[in-house]
Image 1 (cartoon, rainbow, N blue to C red):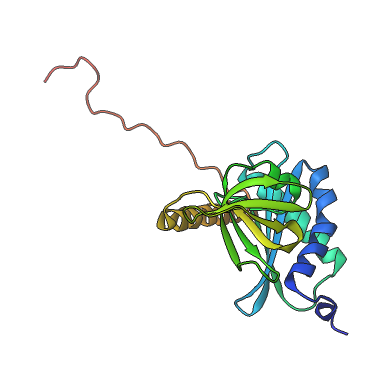
Image 2 (image 1 turned 135 degrees about the horizontal axis):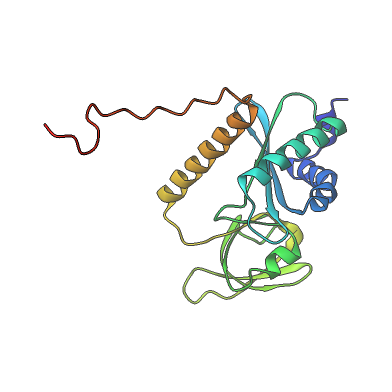
Length: 210
């Protein structure tokens, strides 16, 4: 049986990856916010969102975490076939997964993808309550009543900050280019140091007349 056949859904595989990585990353001072699994470019794409426990992760920390994730994933051999891992900072649309994640952002706008009968596929609005098993969201529609959803039924959750979509796309491109540039620099071997340029001598010494 193919290893991928063991997983009923990308969400189940994401859960197994979280279980594999979370303790090691936390020992390194990192919080595993979420893992998103999807198909793209003919390969399985695995996107891993991290932050520091104190908040505010740097590109160097992302690069170090990428190496840790790669080693753990190779050793576990969870996935048959080709896959791509992307380790990322949270960004403006911070992923939300656990009850603690949601409790930390009560009063802010959220964007939820929801499964289950009797609920919309997408729910946007103000998060007005967060318990251990349920969330309360007041939708954007004027006069709308709060909606209670099961935390278990949330397929994906993100902060839904007000933003300009084009500006967000451009910022994401800049972030990816910077991450790629730093990755290339880390792979390069130290080169020869350039010699300091000699100062150009003037034909005339100071104070000389014509």
